[in-house]
Image (spheres, rainbow, N blue to C red):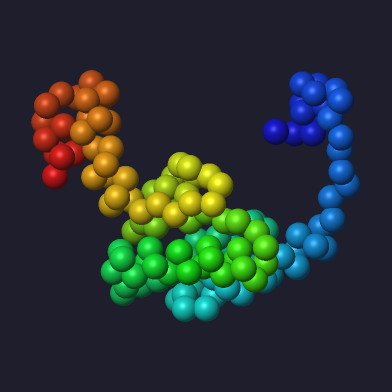
Amino acid sequence: MPLYRALELCPQLTVVRPEFPRYREASDRVFAIFEEGAAAVEGLSLDEAFVSLPGVSLDEAIAFAENVRARVRAEVGLTCSAGVASVKMVAKIASDANKPDVSRSYRWERKRRSRAAARRSTVGHRAEDAAAR
């Protein structure tokens, strides 16, 4: 939300001047943690990245994400969320699904919600059967 809109909605809002050098320092420390054990790190902004872990199982990828989250909290003092999936967009959705400070995997979410999602759609019983697999 832009600052002007926040001030419109909440005129008593206290605005604190940003400290971008501190943000950059924290971001560099977090990205250094990402890079340990990753094949590649694609930074999207100061606080978001895709981490490539080719050749690892889903369980290994989830363990990597949990380790990163624990290290970021311990070493940098920040919380972070992680989404684990084989496709970037799905990983992003998994990460955003329950912020802050969570890890999610696509397979777990698919198993847990597939039937309910299929029932909510209008595509019929064939889609529900496919979603259940």
